[in-house]
Amino acid sequence: MTPTSGEEGPSYHDLAGWYDVIYDARGKDYDTEADTLLAVASEYGAPLRSLLDVACGTGRHLAAFDRHIDEVVGLDQSPEMLAVAAGRVGPDVALVEGDQRDFDLGRRFDVVTCLFSSIGYVDDANELDVAIASIARHVAPGGVLLIEPFLTPDLVEAGGRRDVLTAETAEGVIARVGSSRPDGDALVVDFAWAVATPAGVSTTEERHRLALFTRERYLLAVERAGLEASWREEVPGLIASRGLLIGRRKP
Image (cartoon, rainbow, N blue to C red; front, side, top):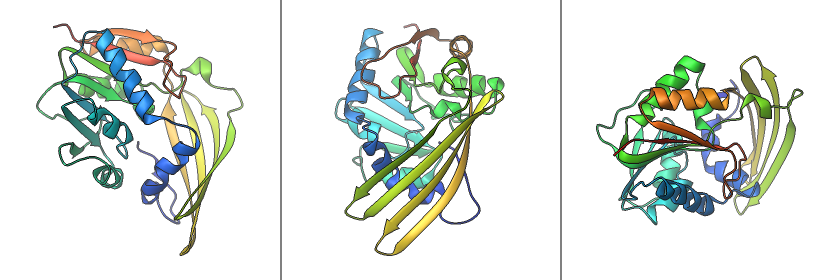
């Protein structure tokens, strides 16, 4: 994920250690999601020997995949997120710093995932094509690409949304207040974070801009990347009801 941090206070990446706490509070079940995604990959005939998770973040999905797949690799452009992931996964899981829009690991995988709407962090449709092509070239013959898309335009509320999440651990408490608003072909999401620990209280604000694409445009990007494209509207087991974009490379 590639947010822009405010000038004052800790950056979003300084909060990497608290990232999972917030999503645990939302009820995100990484183990169930990993099982669901691997079941979908199997339905499309993909072997389950190797897996690349693009924009892997703090490695929660990686750790779940590693229990089922012999070879698992994670890629993220945030060294802070990768540092958290390294403390979570075993030494057999390779972690690579890289940008989803422009990376080349020089090899292919049976399953390639890009989850949690990370694909939304592109500027426009041209960059969507570039990013999906970059990711798709790592799919082996007979393999499957699974992308959890961001919201499609028809799912965006005209007035945006507001919410607040709080969570508590032995180290302290965290609160995140969010507000979103449509802005042309994107959704702008503002967050304000507050973290309280025995050392005191830290706050920061950040803004995310995530591009909005139709299902048809997502499918077109996968087809342009040389894969057979399909879309699943409902995928029980994934917390975000945004569908699933699927690409399959012919054997």
